[in-house]
Length: 165
Image (tube, rainbow, N blue to C red; front, side, top):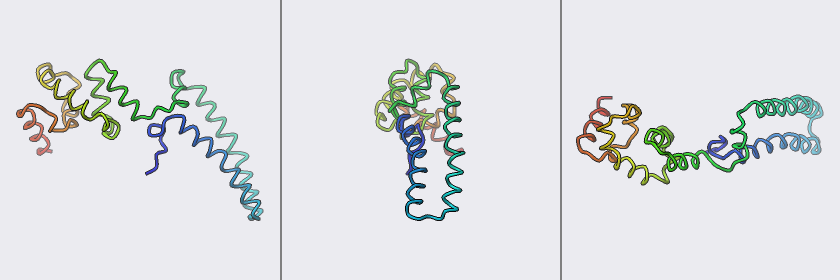
């Protein structure tokens, strides 16, 4: 499995890999040249590098200058997407936000706090059944594991819906 996405690595690790990629091409090219590589290939590679390297830096610079100020720090943060998900769930004050940090995002992001998420569902299920919040639509309900639903009646409804699909 390759974890190259900044959501998996954290911005600082992604930036490091970006810089490493930029630096490795000239280093490998120098190595190839020193080992007596084909002169035509070396000249072509240096020509490509002379175009690609500066244009990549310029494009990244333009991108960095145009992104919202509060996102710039994410390029230098070690916080991974998984950490952000856990923090978002724990610090959320309302159920709708908590649900977006748990059931909409991949389970492997919140697997380490699965007991917390399960307890939150079991504690609030009855309230949600009575209030019927907009965020707890059919799409969200199917994302909640059946065994977490505390009432037998609600579990049967969910299982029935899954079998109907």
